[in-house]
Length: 84
Image (tube, rainbow, N blue to C red; front, side):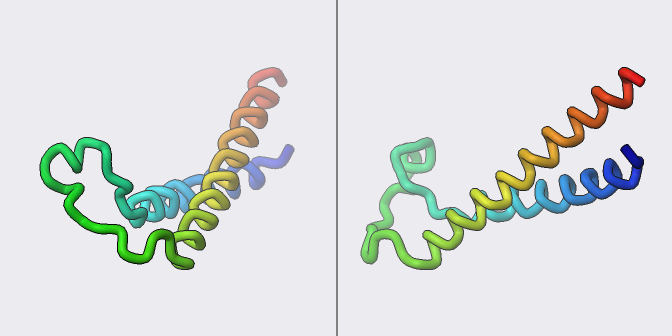
């Protein structure tokens, strides 16, 4: 396999890593964790799950799948390069 594929996968991996971190941090806390122990669980759920939150969930899953595919591709590529 050409090395350009590996470099492309590395660039995509770096971009999706940053996007995945940002998308996860954009999620609203659901409560019940450490934040609620220290008074962070006081907020009320007025509207429940909005369309924006559902889209954020979809984008997070999509970016996570692309990130995972890049990890698997790079692992397989590295295994083939070491074997040859």
